[in-house]
Image (cartoon, rainbow, N blue to C red):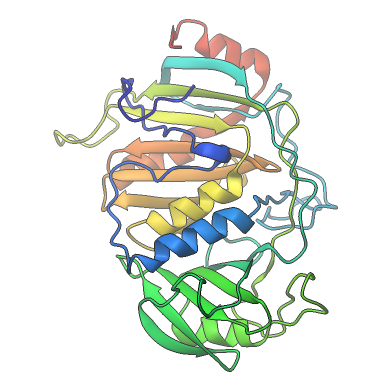
Length: 348
């Protein structure tokens, strides 16, 4: 089990506890300012209606660049033969590890159309718009959804608020048809959000929304079930001599965690908690999102090497060290992984 709050952290250990239902809790080192208490109600309604979705990545034809959000009909990455994706960093040694474990996997194949949808441009983690359609009739007995500032969406009066820093926008609008839209958007302006939402169409109340307005080329991310094996593991690495910032608050370790599922919920959490816009990088040819919880100190790199499975690096060091780790990271086969971790201290 990953170290949770109140549990002892291993060197470089930045992994967070699993939230009930398999979602990702907010990572450490972050502060969030609620817009108003109504957002708590919004979150509760979203949890009741949301589903976790994931996409399949593909390298495409020979010589093509791999992208995020490819249709599920394409092939997965051609990773080295291993039971689950294994990542090493050349020059860094594995200090401690938590061996593979299996957790029960929720059946995500029965996704109700229209409940939960994610939109972003293919090949990028941002800009992103998370859209949840909830039952909502308004009037006496309904939750008070007023927060932030008033805004007009789809010809209706809605409410919009921002987290700190102003990377994430929360929005709610009552559609007056027995439903409401709960929206979380990253790296989009208010005008872009409204234009995208105004252009959404659907055939019926139980059908998914389809965009008609081209906003940064955002398309819906296709829902995929998680891997059936439920496998996950974690490891901490020691940087080689001469690599890493010299400041006292820089760690000589960094952490790797393979999560059995929840790629999309983890990405949503990281995006909404990053202290600055997310960057797009590649890890051994696989696209990844790079963000930071605090300026030039606490970085995360999130990868989806297989549908729904999340692989994450947590690095408490300077940006030059992050770039070094990214440049030296590579996927390996099972035999190479076993040899590299043979002398690592096991933790339970």
